[in-house]
Image (cartoon, rainbow, N blue to C red; front, top):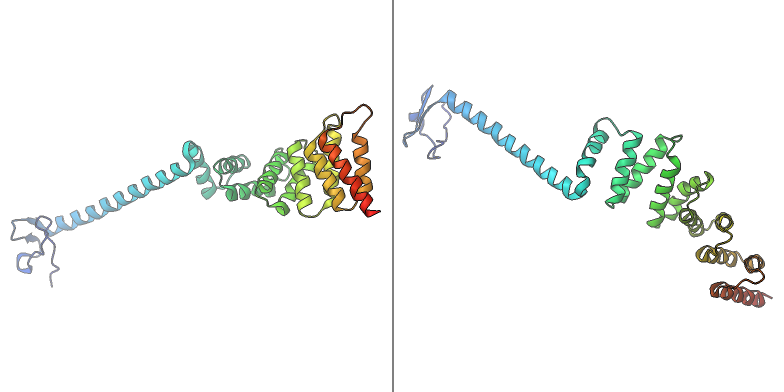
Amino acid sequence: MLQQEICPDCENLIPVDRMDEDIVICPCGFTKSKAQMKFDKRNNKITSYTIILVALFILGAFIHTAKWGTDSIKVAPLQISELVDGLSPKQTIELADFSFDHKYFEKSEKLYQQFLDQNPDHERVLEINEKLGMLLFRQKKFAQAVEPLENYFLSNGENPQTLFSYGKSLTETQDLGDAEEVFLRLIKTKPEVYQVTVVQALLDLYVAQNKLTEAKQFISKLIKPGYVVPTHLQEQKELINELISKKS
């Protein structure tokens, strides 16, 4: 039984009696060999698939550009490498940094951790521990932030803000003894500067641990002869004295 064909001109089914083994003749006047019709149908399918693929590519490129903005051209080869060959240490950091800049923090966190796991002796480990630790700290993931910030601290990292964040992470996770050590180190690095936030954090620790005598001694060391006592420090001194009186 012959398979009926749809006429490409009138788009109606061509009657069976107008189809023989080689030629198809439609009442509308369309005439073509079956071989040519099969060839045309195959080409039309290829063309349709090509159009679909091109459309998908354009759509993907649009989404990629919308996601990464002006960095899209730089990010694309990194993503291809990630899928095909894996990222080099340098590429891992680059993609992590791009992810961070565009607020894809989960991706950035994953890549920084991947770098540290795979390259423990790399020259940029200190920097990446700091980046990962601060990323976690800013998201209030204090327990997770402790490890990279501790590595930064133990490797003699010097950024005051990063060290303060390490101390606060320890405080949030109730590791008060180590937090005290961090805050004291911060104060010793710049003894000539009255670091209000660090002093407050340390005094809060002393109070939390009921180390009121240590708190009083600490304040006394900060107040030197002829020293104009900052209002904040004077308030803290009075508070500690009041707590000691109540305890007595």
